[in-house]
Image (cartoon, rainbow, N blue to C red; front, side):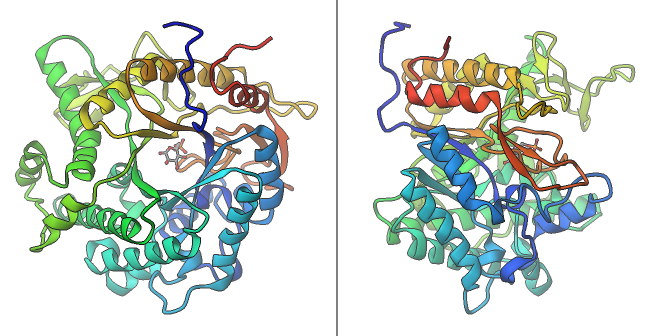
Length: 467
Ligand code: BG6
């Protein structure tokens, strides 16, 4: 690549991301209703931090936006908590205080010239909808979600041009508590989860159609989790296992979002499990009519897959039934939680998605987790700096390869509650001084990665190494 070539457009969205339950706290304040994230956090509260305070963003919005401004962020990705707007998910009236909280955040962002990127659903479905009618196992949730989405478009759409429908529907399908599912019989569970999955596809599609109707100039898409999968060897069995895992876990979702139909391999996979969802006449039109304007990708790492069951002495491997298992890649470094460090895999992933869908792409999450240490007000997170450097460099290569990228949001803007692993698994550019079970005052400190990313943004990504 020609080092002097300008790669990033001047309006490239250099951003950082969070989600409501992971950062806000204030989980019972000002009329907020309970949701599935609250329930999941409560289940684990004896062993790790819960979301009652999280990073205390609910009380520190102005301070947090001021730091974003200092960092030079061009965009900030956050999620609206459905049960702050409608505490029961489908109340007649909006909860004014919840609405005002996001008004305040969005106004502060706009004042700071930071583009808001808003996710409508990030792992937090209002619990009341589960008691009332079984949540997304029922079609009623599709319309309730659409009503909530339409409220957001109408109310915030004068200031918000970038929307994301559902965060990581594919991950929600592998953690049943995220959708509030309690079925324990494995056969019934698969069937129910696949019905929920279908209704989420419909909810995504209806929200896209509503956005296009109400905000013709705005852009909307889903945010998909996309860990790239490598085969363990060139043995065709391993190649096929890797392809199948990748298709079932990520590309089937992207295909349904983009083309509005289940790929045949996915339908076959559901038939074998007797888990084909019930559909209604007219659904197809909705699914096919709701084309996303862009693809949001949450990309962290690559995984390696080998066909068949693991050998019993192989302690490092994770089994996924009899068909395949995941093994460690001897060529890569890993976080303490087993997520690999693979920037070249990032370039491969971007090229693959571009070739398949030819839709502009936004990285909605990408980041490195570690147990960071605060010493004399400083945090030396060199590995996170390396991760940012190496992944942005590979994104540049991908753009040079022809991939259309509209933004990059590192995960996360600030330390927050991990979606499954508590508070000490930190991702932020800003350190939050709290411990797992003692939230202290949640004082903010800028990590070394904050200053590094500040320089990258200032250079519009054309320079990645600094004195
Ligand atoms: C994505 C989620 O799965 O990955 C985030 O959208 C999450 O909510 C992030 O925090 C990292 O995962 P974890 O489990 O380390 O928090």
